[in-house]
Each structure stands twice: as C-alpha cells, then as structure tokens.
Amino acid sequence: MSFDPNAPAAGDGVYGLPHSPTEARVVVVPVPFEATTSYGGGTAGGPRAILVASRQVDLFDIETGRPYAAGIAMLPEHAEVRQWSEDGVQMARRWRDQHALGLGDAALEADRDRLDGLCERLNRGLRSQVEALLAAGKLVGCVGGDHGSVFGAIAAHAGSYPGLGILHVDAHADLRHAYEGFAWSHASIMDNVLAHLPGVARIVQVGVRDLCEEERDRIAHTERVRTHFDALLTGARAAGQAWAEEVARIVADLPEQVYVSFDVDGLDPALCPHTGTPVPGGLSFQEASYLLGAVARSGRRIVGFDLVEVAPGPEGNEWDANVGARLLYKLIGWMLVSQGEAPPA
Image (cartoon, rainbow, N blue to C red):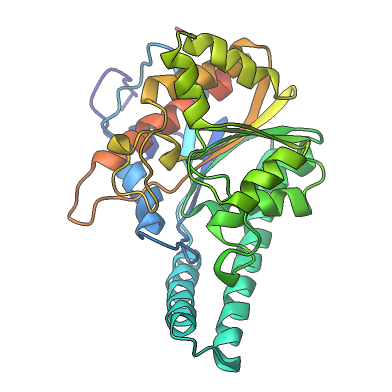
C-alpha cells in the first residue's frame, strides 16, 4: 500500500510514518527514565504517550513544510531502561523519606550511590547509541524522561560538534550541584554539562523563572551561561518590545551549531499541566516555534535536540502528549530547515 501523507495515520511508526531507522534521516530515541524526579512523576511515560499522540498530527506544517518527507523513525523503548527507572524511583523515595526524618544511614547512602550508578550507566549507553547514529549520518532527537536522562545525548553531540551551543528552554536553570544528593538529578543537568562537557561553548537559557539564589549567582559569574529570564522577557514585551526583537537578542548569544534542550515546562503550564514541576509563566507554543525558527533563519544549524518532562495525565488525559507530539514535530521541522534539507512552507 502506498503512503498518503494526506490520509489518516495508518502505520505504527511515529506520526504514522512508514520509515525504518535505516531509511529515516531523523531518528528519535526514547528514554523512559525518571528516577530523580523530585515533585510530580510520570515522565517515564512521556515517550510512549507522544508516540501514540503523534499519529493524529497532520503531516503538513504551515511553518516548516513537509518534515516527514526526509524520513522520521522512532526507536523502540528499551525495557531495561524502564526497569532501571522503576528501581531508581524506589531508591530515591527511600532515601528522601529517611532523610526527611533525619534517619540517614549507610544503607540509605548506598541507595543513593546505586541510583547515581544507574544514571551513569544510562548516560554511557545513551551516549554510545547516539554516537553510533550520528556516525551513520542521522539527525538525532531524544525524548525523555526527566531532564537528567538525556545527558548522554548532549555528550554525544558535544563530541561530534565541538564548540556547539545549547539553547536551553526551561522554567528552571538546572544548575544545582547534586540536587537532593543525586549527582545526576534532573535539576543538575546543566551543572553537569558545565562540569563534564568543555566542548559546549555556551548555554543560552530561555524561560527561566524558578531558581535558587546560588543558581542566580552562578549565572551572573559564568561566561558560558547566558540566561534570558522569563520575567524580564515578559516585562520587555509589556513595555512594547516585539517578541522578534527579544528573540534576535537570544539567538545572537548562540554559536553557529546549536543543540536544543527543551524541557516542556518552559512552556505555559496550560500546555503541560501534568509535567513534573510546572511553574506559572513561560512561552506560548507559537513563541517557542518562532524562537526555533529564528535559529534556523539566522543561518545557524540545529544539530540535535531533546524534549523532556512530558508526562501523560494520570487518568488518560492526552493533552500533554498532544502538545508534546506537536512540539516534537516542530523541533524536527526546524532542525531540517536549518540543515537546508527541508524548505519552509
């Protein structure tokens, strides 16, 4: 049966597409891991929920044209990774509960160390997997899971594209040292990038509106980090500055090669109500897409991305997954446009 992009999705692939990973230009790697989540849970179910929701997304996009034509495939989840996540959640819960009561002991510290070991194992495996895909000429996006779950993907891209910048869209700065005692916490992902990936030239943050004083001080004194706080962006718009002008300032901070790390809570929480740590404020969907498009229009290349912290509703609510699937398609589309491989509509 021939593939009809105008018909309802008929296949089991992401967006109902028929491409195999070998055929596809863009390969999406699911990472169903959320062991360090510190507030709401459910993000380990994000990749699967996005896959299901993607099949009702129309394939023509008014901004990016026909991303599907390049070929998009999503790899199957690793059952082992999901088991690591479930085991890690239990370890983290025991450690937090006991420390809240002041009852920490050697056995609980061992739980923490085992969880960090699980995260390191995940990082090594994901980095190796993404490096192999990049070596095969693929464009790679990862779908988490919590934000800490994609460090291996960032590391793989940093190794392949020395001097790249990270466009980090997030409600949080994620610059905490070993948050809650966990070295690979979702709240420490950008701290780990600074500590372990010297090949990342700069982190440019957008939408940050929830951070601690230590993180604020690090931002002020770290040349490799430029943060465009949500409150200041909103204030400038209230004073009459156009979003296009603000975006131009953001994009100017980025080097020529860009990796996008997109935590869905960087959006208005009306778009992601079940994400683990929602915060009032944030970008609209179209503001986010305009930002990604501005990177492509500037002549910079988006070389890879991750989309994290999408959590399906506990009672089957599909709104978060619906938004996540559409945001994933925008990330793929603008990446292809930036690579000169898909003409915008």
